[in-house]
Image (cartoon, rainbow, N blue to C red; front, side):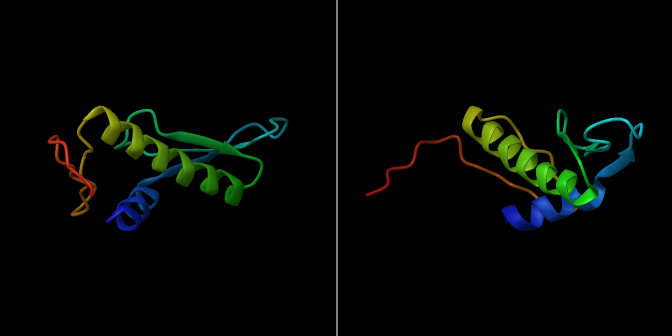
Length: 86
């Protein structure tokens, strides 16, 4: 469920190359996920950082009970009810 959601988010990501004199000229964001963006020295560095940011974004939204918007048919739903784990 998480891997498929992250992959769908990466497919929606928009990438830009900033000015050449920037230390991390590659920039990416996911328009459907507010606040999700990353930079990197190379395209691959930027993409890896974006995956990490998406993972953290999901974790924070789950932690605080915030909704996670669907991307295409991919959703992440969590119960707001406490669960006993034995």
